[in-house]
Structures are given as C-alpha cells and as structure tokens.
Length: 381
Image (cartoon, rainbow, N blue to C red; front, side, top):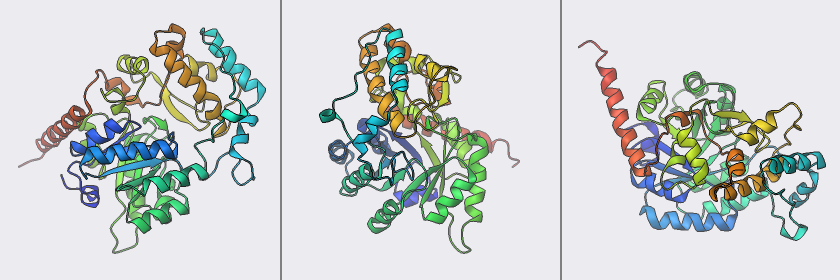
C-alpha cells in the first residue's frame, strides 16, 4: 500500500498499533505495520529497558513511542514538589476507595510512606526525562496523547528528524495541532479506548481531514491524518481511508492478543464483552477516558460518589488500588474480578478471541483488500 504515512515512515501497511506491551509493538512492526510503545506509565529506567529490547527484536524496522506530555495538570507552575501531590488527595476520596474495595472483599490500600513514594508520571519533568531516553534510540515517531505537544517535544522531534504525532478529538484541536507544527494528526473518535472526546470517528475523520487541508498553506502537502476509534478490522480500516485518512491508529484490538500485557482476568472480560460494555469516565485519570465497565466505574458514577480529582492526582489515588485489584483478580478473587477494568474502546464487542498480534495484522490486511475489492464492484465498468 502507498499512502503519505507509508512513504513518510517506510512501512508496508498504514496500520499503527499503540500498545504498552513491547512484544505487541515488535510483532506488529515485524509484520509490516507500525508498532507504537505507550510509555506514559514507564519510568525512564523502564523505558530504556523496553526500547533496548525492541531494538534487539525488530531488526532496524521502524517503530514509535507515545508519551503523555500534558499542557496542564494539577500543581504545574506552582512550585510544588510532585511527590507532595500525594498529600492533596482528600480524606473523603481515600475513604471512598477504601470502602469500595472493602465492599468487594479487597483490603484497603494504605498510602505509601514518604520514603516509598514515586513521582507522578503525568508531569513535564517525567516527560522530559522519557524524551531523553526515547531519542537515544532509533525511533521513527514520537506521539503525544493529550493536547498540543509542548514546545520542547516539538523541538526535539524537529532536531532529530523524527515526525511528531498528536491525538485530537475535534476539528478545532486539529487546526491548533497543525499550527503548532505537528507532522501527523490522529483523529480519535469517542469510540476509542483511553482519553477521548465526544465526537464519533465517522464524523470526526472527514471533518479533521477537511480542516487540516484548509489550514495548509498553498503549495504545501497537508499534514497526514490517521483515523482512530473503534477500528478493529480491515473493513473499518478501508472505511477510514475512504473518509480521507492516510492510515489507521489502533489500540484496543491489541489488548486481547496473546502477547498483550492485559491482566488475564480483564482480557477474559474483554473477550466476553459487547460494544455496550464500556464507559467514558474520569474515574481513572481525572480526564474523560473510555474503559471497560465494572463495579469500579459504576461506583464512581453513583450520585454519592466524590467528584474525580484533577490529573494526575486521580491517578495517584486509583492506579495503586487497580493494580492490586488486577493481582487479586488473576488469583481468582471474585470481588476483584468485579472491580477490574482497563482502557478499551467500543470495538471490544468484535474482539471475541485471543490471537497472536501477527495474525491480527495479516487478517486486517486481508480484510482491507477484500473491502476495497467489494467497493469496486459498485462502480460501473
């Protein structure tokens, strides 16, 4: 296939696979797609280990890294030590989580002692440290998953000759990204897993494509647009290109792969889920994100629940508890299985079995070709 992004990145198939799992990233890249390592939850030390492993397993084939370098977050610019953000979790929120865990037979999560606290991973300091690691490896793309990439990220990409991608949920956001200087815009509809807006993929993609074209100076090639949100098969990928996209950015479909890092109990819930079994909630990170519906998300949506805290404070409250839930769920704890959740899009309803990542790539390529051929039959000779 030939699209602006296949030529820009030197790949065979304009299929981008966002995953926190290095094995998925390598498998997709080796199968002709483009693996993107989600590194928002990695420490710089962990990221170094992951990228070194990927380098050893892709034989020089291209891959990318996705970070969260938010333009705004609680405590930014206030001179606070990020570790001190732990102390900004209200007692009522701690009590709510403790009672929710206890109601499902899970022991309350004790706040870490001062000497055991880790810095939040949704701050400028963390993003800069991870960028240093990423650019020390032969990455071919750096993506920012939340808002316009900060100037320091854009500058690093330009200096290294590495394209910078950014996710958007509205046409206006896309225009701002182009004006800021990004090289690829990912139009992510509300069907997607993780942080999402409210506009559906079918509406958003052509809207963003038109807006990007209009914002492009005469005589200049428009910034390529990737479609994201609910895309889990090749027919949807063909539809994305028909809407004007240059490729598909996918994430959820890889969560039920054999190689995926998804907790096994959560993976089983995903395989059994329908497209109605996700919810857009602020309960995990403080910003709206789509995730698997569970007793955790239902509790935070109840009228008597406290309002979610700003990013990254909500994550400091939720992530330790949910990681503990995952461990207990894997051991067969029924209460923990009821609470278990993870970021996933509405395409989960079509993710009905566990497969190797390479098989997913090949199947999507075959489905894409079949869809294009089927469309051709509608045209008069």
